[in-house]
Image 1 (cartoon, rainbow, N blue to C red):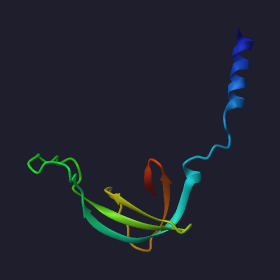
Image 2: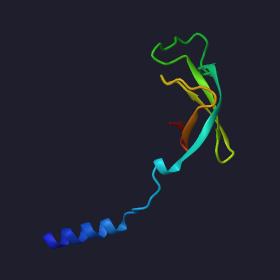
Image 3: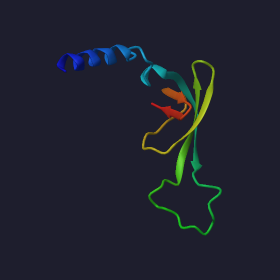
Image 4: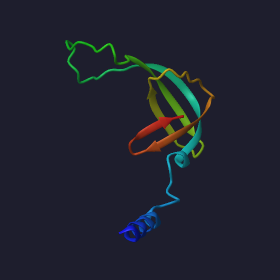
Length: 100
């Protein structure tokens, strides 16, 4: 039984991809072109619905020109302050756009 478990472990280790692209390998460098404050909200929400104070009501719309020529827009609600001309790294995927 011990040899069987060792053989299965070696087989599974051989099946893994050692050169699979990770998130850090998919980062694209770019430069922030513009930062503008925007009001966040759900346009489909009823006007008489009470607001949740835990959710941020304002954020920053960040426009980033990537080194490969693409332009991405994202809304950032965290504590970090961005400014035009600042170099950044961006992860673009089907799930969304993330800025580092």
